[in-house]
Image (cartoon, rainbow, N blue to C red; front, side, top):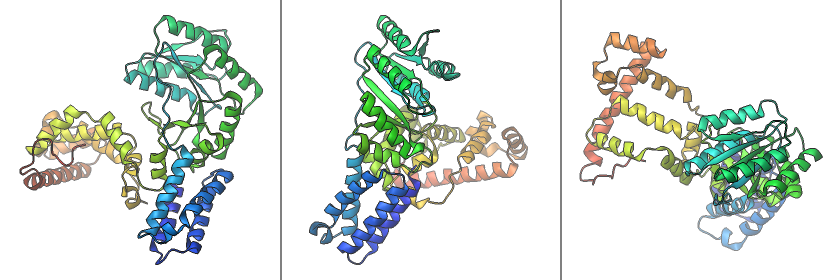
Length: 442
């Protein structure tokens, strides 16, 4: 997401930094380009107008024109204004501190409500809370079945009632939650293909029955300006507590993310960044602004690493690297840890400067799967001691993994080169370093 917008901003600021001297004219010319880039990214035109005015008021001042790094100063002003538009500070979900805390999710059909219910339930479980999923979408075919499959996959109970209207289902679910010491009740409501009075009346009644601590609109970031109009109408009618942006991993232009907070005044609380149930993040305006301006998001990357990297295994790996005992078994384990963090393209985009450096280069996710298949086709003895892999073993591994012998040779060649590099690094990097100082450890 934001791919085109990031590229446009990068080019605009590069031209500004390359100018011998900044004047009011070239600043205003650059801001015209910024305006065009935002409009093309589907940002609401009123939001763009106010954004450009605020930036121009700050950027044309004497402080900027006479500063040592005027180009950098303008980038800073644009960044600060983007953060302001997106909400300034992250707004957390209501704490799960009573039996039950109630989250109600609403939105149009296909926006990703049911999947988000599963993601929220998984997050609650990780915090040692007891969640309950409530199937209040009785209209969409297979909606209840989809929620049941999600619940079963993470070990979370799903509450459902036959022949009852959604408000009554929610009322009964709350009573059940109170009796069974449920910490968090997550309600999956019905969507429609468009906003209609029946949908709003039903949500009004559900709200009245369960008094939700969070009433969250799930807005599909792929729908652009329509997502903003949707959020505005829902908020006017229901007084939402927050918005969750779904499908932020897609190729949407990003206008919805930038516009929703400014148009509705309703905070964006969640960002759904992938299809896995673990792909859910709190929405941080400052981090999102940094991503939009191509500055990366190293804080989110570190948080992802902390959630997925096994610290005990990392310590063992460090010890092996110190002793030059790194094997293909260890390499396989590291690949699997990286895959848990999400798509490679998403991870790389969080590293400042790397996204730009790799622009235009295709990230081969399937390549990792091929390497994984090759290593998994080896015996444990072969993984621990790859030097024993001769011609007949290579043919067997190639056949078992669906690869060619040439691919096996390439993998082994690269692995032996990596071992040699680690050995050389140990000579220079570890000499005199205390334990725990391994420079590549996450």
